[in-house]
Image 1 (cartoon, rainbow, N blue to C red):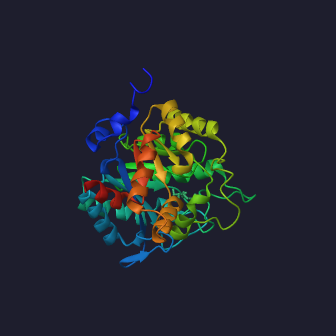
Image 2: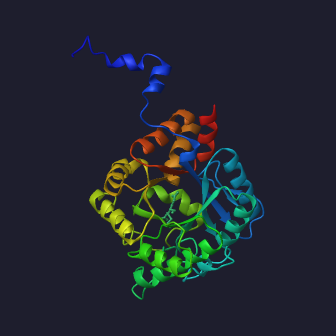
Image 3: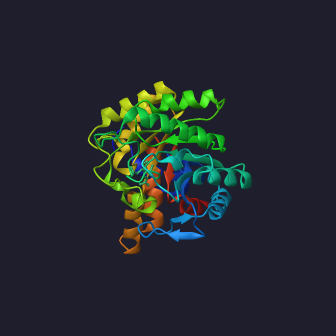
Length: 325
Ligand code: PB1
């Protein structure tokens, strides 16, 4: 029936009707909080580009995890900042490394909170790349995969509830699955950063973690922002290799990819609302150009509407508080 018999505004006329027909939900239980834990730090250090986000000592990371749990967040995603960096990123697969120690401490204090661990070498290498460098200065895939797998096993042995490889090396998901299974860690899920783009939106993170590449860039292993089909192929490849969940990263500039990956894999999909996306919203809110609460909840809802089951976001604690109101 055409207008005036059909009036689509009828279902928008009151808040209860709008709530009744709302298609996408956003809850604290959909959100994961990234946490930076730094070796040798006493207390907290603010990250200038990311207001409200800090580098934490292990004890402060335990406190932050408790605050996350109290807000109904299901888990945290740990990023380590080691006291020492070297060409092989040895801190990443040290059983007494910063992420391993923080994982144990958080699981002991908050056993019901999920601790996910980022698996990569870039925070641990002195050159800042996500893998080992070959003689030509490019990231050497296969030797890097071995260290990525060792890192994942070390983190899982420390108690990680899931490991999340963000390195973008070919074959790393299969190598991690085989290494975990060899260790008897057959129940540790892999959350693969499958569609991870060579994005300008990682800037604040790299400042926070001191993980910017010392030379060159990550375009030899992270995806071209122009390539959605390749992103779906990456996700399907990771599924074949044994990924239990796949991820798209960044999130807001890639909602089409979130949708395509969800439809192609039908697996649980995570989307990472990265540091640059966070910094943009915070900066616009600080200048009064955006209402932070409304903009953040709209952005996170959009990421969920695109098909993400889980949103990794630095807004997680704020969003959980706003959603309680
Ligand atoms: O919030 C962010 O910007 C996340 C950055 C992301 C962390 N997984 C990567 C940024 C980068 O490519 O430098 C780290 C890659 N291992």
